[in-house]
Amino acid sequence: MEGLEGLRRTFRSGRTRGVDWRKAQLLALVKYLAENEAQILEALEQDLGKHPVEAYRDEIGLVKKSAEHSLLNIKKWMAPKKAQLPLLLFPSRAEVLPEPLGTVLIIGSWNFPFSLTLDPLIGAISAGNTVVIKPSELAPACSSLLCRTIPCYLDSEAIKIIEGGSDVAEQLLQHPWDKIFFTGSPRVGRTIMSAAAKHLTPVTLELGGKCPVILDSFSDSDFKVAVKRIASGKWGSCAGQACIGIDYVLVQQKFASLLVESLKSCIKRFYGENMEKLQNICRIVNNQHFDRICKFLEEPGVAASIVYGGSINREKLMIEPTILLDPPLDSQIMTEEIFGPLLPIITLDNIEESIDFINARPKPLTIYGFTKNGKLKEQILQETSSGSVVFNDSLIQFICDGLPFGGVGPSGFGRYHGKYSFDTFSHEKPVMHRTFFLELEPRHPPWNEFKMDFIRLAYKFDYVGLLLLLLGLRRMFTPNRSR
Image (cartoon, helix red, strand yellow):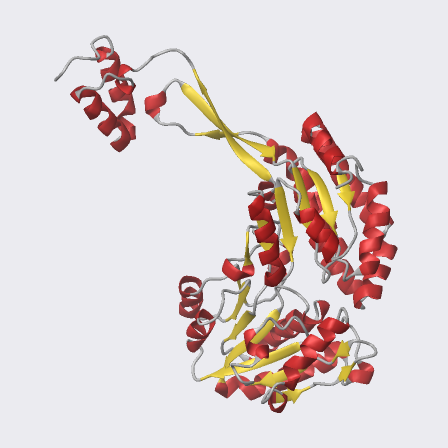
């Protein structure tokens, strides 16, 4: 593909390896966000109907914070790390040297078209790679803006943006890459992996899944806070079109009615009382996804479970925040990722049943546990598997540079954010330095009983390495002597 060989030449030249180049690109990215904030907000409103506050919180502010965090730490991340060696190998030293992988491909997602594209880019730049970015065509205004403006700020001989649909993505995947980073659906993730396997290309897949909430009992004041965080975690981040968005809630039967009423109150306060007054909530990205979500509500038994909302506006691609109480467990709304503003509530006899409920389904990207019960927390941590666990809040893990972000199993693999982004786009190369002093004969043929004893002890008791070294020196001049 045109330009790809040029990126490889740039990488081979060594230009991207220096700390000055990396810092210059990160500073340029911070400048880009500052100078294009109005255009970014406009593009996000055009593609998704994002409110400027939500757009800044989840896109501009997040990327700016990530870039500044990398600027503060990049020199430390690049430095070789001293490694420990067995005493038996004295005198020697070793280090682990982070080096860039090469030319990498980043395929972004439409639901957070700036943060899910530029945040991985920060990691790739920090690690010293050349990069091709493929924004999602499902957010055309954002994709076009990135393509027009990013080359004015970043090194165009090292970082390129290629627009297009699935056909362009397929062409890109035919080429060998040193790393592919993809954010999207498990279905497309399988295609990415299959293409990468032909070239043995390492991949990071940030996928999704049905992220559950486990809601335990609380005092009135804590319950109100929990419900607010659930409501904003479900509907306040791209109208539920988020990989870490809340997919369903597990709660004891006796608290279900209180939860429903509390959620209704939050919805009315946050987003409006009906479809006509709906505000502060994104629209569905396009007709295809709108129809997909609506089909969930058309399945037998699902419509009857709606206890709030359910109104739609096809012309505006808006779906009212909707609560469903105990929809059929075999329905699509409970077997597929919803990725929209529908919230099923599943009632249980006791909250401990939530562990088996979650384990009977594919591993989620995140489990949200609202509880003060230490025993239940330990059960969630020890008896379930998920990309991450958050107690008593929702979605906030995504903004934490000190925490790795990623999935497990069908919710993806690999991780990024902060230093983890740097690591994702780096190879940790071990480097060992030895001298020609003190050659131990027991490591070389011809073999004998003494050498066998020496090697056994050397592997078993490294702390006596110095003693073995001395023994080896004493006998190094008689290597064939039998005991």
